Image (cartoon, one colour):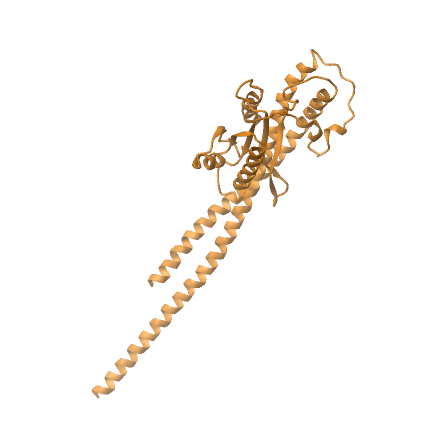
Length: 304
């Protein structure tokens, strides 16, 4: 076997092994997408009822709460960026990072200092490599978040928002919205202070269009808001984590399918090149045999 043919066969074996890996990752991601979508659907009823309750208290009372009162002289904003812990997901994490940087630039143009909080190793690596300041980070659950994870993230962000000194005046979330298996959009939304005219239910119906009954608040409207608004923030963060997890799996499935298809095309191309090299070797061997036979025949005729 010639050297060129050995090179082609070695590359074919390598690409075939890679194809098996990408195919397995594609199938795993495809299976996890369904679970992630079911988790999003399961969280919707709780989030909807909580949204209705928060909207009812905030609109049916004169209570002033730091989570619903906008500061006209806002000077500091927090941005929660949700990315993936692992790569091989196409442009999923990079699109979210770009959206975060765009939002950060806009906030700074408004004269606000920005502190970034990050979920996922990809976002953390990006900011760390460029020596960008990070308020805090959480890793290890981007592909399968739980409500406990959202509660941990939400607790620190609420603490930063309600701090009397050194806190933030606004809280924004940059996540990836799962639209379909082929489309996932990086979106940025302001989470705090709560804008009642922008509060939406999971079915995209504005909460302000709801017809609310009369309420009596015990012990007070402020006390009810103290209890409800942190849960509302946690549910919004949880929904963003679930949407991002579904988007991550969909993006990884699409990327791995593309890689598998490309590996198949490369194997076909290498196989054709290997066949051509083998054919060239056979042709050369036949030529050498024929040439040798002719030389022997000429030598025999000369000796006669």
